[in-house]
Amino acid sequence: MPSAPSLPHRWSTNDIATLVSVSADGLEAKLGIPPPNSKNELEPAAIRTTDPIPPQCGVFYFEITVVAKPPDGCVSLGLSGSKTPLSRLAGCDTDSWGYHGDDGHIYVCQGSGKAYGPSFQTGDTIGLCVNTQSRSAFYTKNGLAFSTAFKDLKDKLYPTVGLKPGEHIAANFGFGKPFLYDINAYVQNCKTILYKQMASLERSFKPPSSGITPEVFSNAMVESLVYSYLVHEGYGDSAHEFAKELKVIGAHTEEETDNAHNHHRQKIRAAVLSGNIDRAISLTNLFYPNLLTQNPNVKLQLELRRFIEIIRFLALRGSDTSSADANSAAANGGSSGINGNGKDVEEDLFKTLSAMGNDEILLHAIEYGREIEAEFGQDSQARSHLEQTFAIMTYQDPLNSVLAPMLDPAGRAEVAEELNSSIMMSLGKSKVSPLKTVVQIAKLASLLLASAGPSGFLANIDSDVFAPICSEQYEEEDREEH
Image (cartoon, rainbow, N blue to C red; front, side):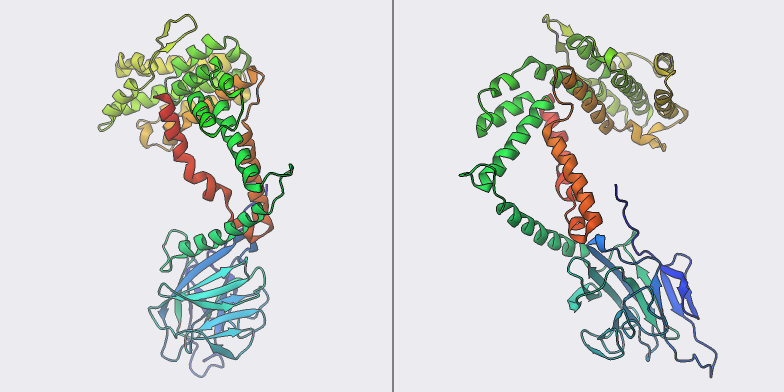
C-alpha cells in the first residue's frame, strides 16, 4: 500500500542562507541585519521548507504573516526548486516563482516582474495556493483571493520566502491553526469539477448488453448491490421493502427476505449492537449450535466484548454524572427473543448486572476474565488480545483513561459484523456482501490513484463518499432494532 508523502510543515534549518534564523517550531524566519559597511549589508536571502509539495496532494495552501518589514523592505513569497540558490528573493532565479511585497509584482525565474496584485506590509497575511492537478498557483491577501499567478509549474517545488535584512515572517502550514482564506471551499469546488468529469466518463460507458442505456445499467447494478447488502447484513424488512418498491430483483426476493435465517441474524445483530452479549451468545447457540465451537476467534471476540460491557457498566454507574446512562444501558440491553419452540430467550447481561452491587460486579469481571484466560490463554495471539483488554481494569477511571476508546459502544459493530460473517459462511454464503467488496476495491483504487497523481487524491472515496453516510448506517441499525 502506498504511503502518504510528507507535506511542507516547517522552514529548513539545514538548507539556509547566512544570517537567516528559524524559530524552534520551524514556523518563523527572520533575516538579521549585518554589521555596518558589510558587503552583505543590503543583500537579500531566501529560505525554503524541509519538504517539497508532493504532486499527489492535489491542492496545497499555506500563509505567512509579515511580522516586521522596514519601509524599504521586500518580503517575497513563492516557490523554488531544490537547487535554486538562496541568495536572491523568490522568483528572481532559475526554478523560482515569487510575489513581491514592495511593488505587488510577480516574478517568474528572472529579475524582472509584471503587475499582479497589491503590495503588502507589516501585519498583512499572504497566502499561496498550489494546484498540482492544473499545475497553477494563485495568491491571497488577508483572506481574499487573486487571479492565477503562475501556470505550467514543475513538480516537487518548495514553499519559499525571500527576505531583506530586518524582515521577519511567521508561517501557517495549516496544522492546528485556521487560515484566513477559506481553502476548504476552494478544494470542494475542485472536487465538484472533478466528479463532474468522472460522471461524464460514466455516461460514455457502454453496457455489455445492447439496447440498455448506461444510466439504466448503472442504476440496476447499484440497486442490486444495495439489495444484496441489506440481505447479507440481515436487514430483512428493509430489503423486502426496497425490492418491492424498485422491482429490481425478481421472484426470489420474497424467499430471501423472509428467510428465517435473516430474522435470526437480525436478532443476533441487534443484541450485539445493544451490548447485550449474553443474549447474542444464547441466540447464536440456539439457532446455530456449533457455530461458536467451530469459530473460536469469533467466540473470543464475543467474550472479550462481554468483559468490556461489564467494565463499561461499572464505570458508568460509578461516575457522578452517568448513573442514568448505566440504567439506560440496562433498559436497552435487549428485549426477549423468541426461540424455535416459541419460548423466550431471557438472557440479559444488563439486568443481571443491575441486580449486583459494585463490588459484586468487579468480582464477577475478575472471575469472568479468568474463565476467558483459561479457555483461550494458551494461544499466543489470543493472549495478546486478552492482555490488551484486561488492561482496562488497571485504571481507576476507565472512562477518562487512555483506553477509554475501548469502552465506546461503536466497538460493538465490528463484533456484530464478524459474527454475522461467520453465520453467512456456515450457511454456504459469502462472508462479505458484494457491496462491501466493491467498497474495498474502490478504496484501494483511490489510494493507488492518489499515489499516481493529484486527481486521485482529490477524489477521496473515504472522505467524500463513505464518511458522510457512516452515521446513517447506525441510524438504520437503530430503526431495524426497534
